[in-house]
Image 1 (cartoon, rainbow, N blue to C red):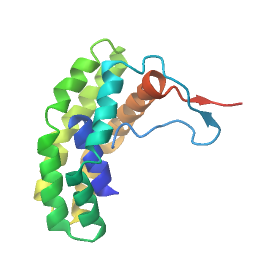
Image 2: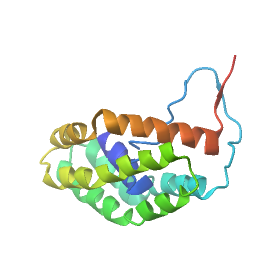
Image 3: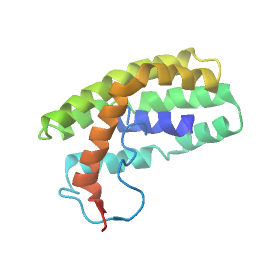
Length: 163
């Protein structure tokens, strides 16, 4: 869980986003349809980051985490973070025409990435890493993640609660 969460965070920003773009829509009674702008730069970037988060290196990190091999997981996650670094600017550019609330949410998420990377590098166990990430993320990050998730839902997924 921690590996997947960090991998997605790096991949979507190094966006800070498995952390951020997990859908925040009701899981029950939801109907998927095309979003308002599924071919936008933002939606294309999201699709790319989803692919990146299931890369062989990210998969290896997840397997190492599940196996309890923190040193291997840590090494692989640091590599994933380095590879995902260019996505931050791509995300900011992709959201240039987004509402102000979405732009503000991205800034919050992007500011978290260096703290997550430091927590990853400094942690001697998965539990220590998770605790450090929980400490730096907090309510402000959770609120930003909800804003980004809602924007994702309307632009890319188009999830609508059924009646």
